[in-house]
Length: 123
Image: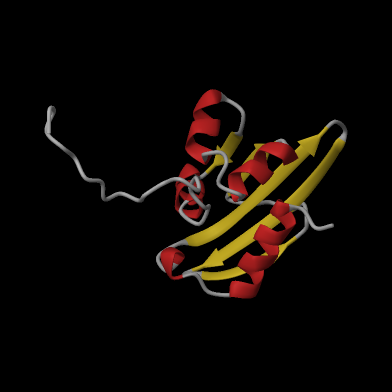
């Protein structure tokens, strides 16, 4: 059975081009560590062109996380910025790249997007 993280990275690689990252370039390495075992995913972005490999190589940004947390991020059950602020995830290097890639992660299933209807109190 393929886990959510593997599906996420394989989908990014199949996509080839992501318009949301058309102005972005750089490399991100995701180090998913559980005990003594670390799985590495390398995402290369060249003005929106994406390439994903499983290798341990130098990168502009290195993101550290537990595999379970990363599965929650790529399924929308967890938020990357919140995990980073709590200290559950680490980032070394260019934080801007992570913030740009974070837009590709799904939001919670019950989210309604940035447009919300605000009502006056009592109405």
